[in-house]
Image (cartoon, rainbow, N blue to C red; front, side, top):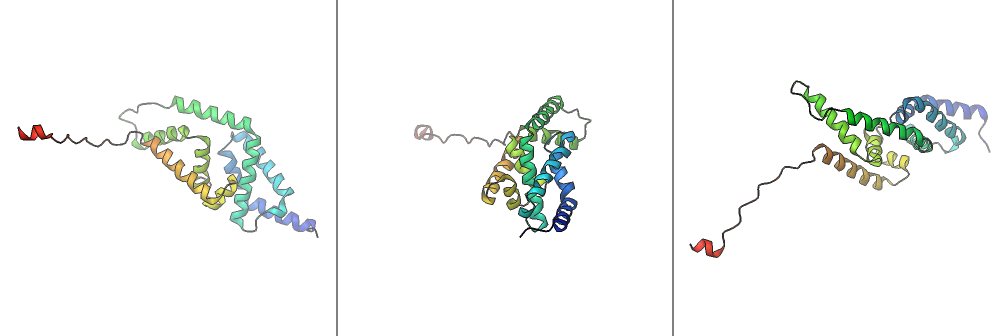
Length: 187
């Protein structure tokens, strides 16, 4: 038995109204802003076609749409390449040394931006799903099509990679002096 058309339209409108802004932000962080709305339109077209597969809880439906949007983004690879090229140019123009008059917060943000751009795209995506998109590990795992345990491992590795890039030179411990040999001790 198929769903009556008015009920289907109502369900889709509710889904759209509840998630559009979040899905648009999700896309805008991953492609050039001029392409984000096109990607979101494609994602909602897929959602309309697969409306019977939408999870019932709002958070799960949102994560499901993020997964669909991610697949649409992968299909729009040219836009991602333009975005990456722009990020590289911005990172290259950032000043390497800050003047003493600059605000410490600005310097820290520049360091964070440089560290972010040094991460692999997979590490950036893993961190973005949790930090920017506010997804749980299980929801983010669904977006990537992996298990929650696999996502937690990726998240742990991505956080470590970001920390390493923010503090690349670990403090060196003093090397203890060698113990005297028997001959030196007798003299």
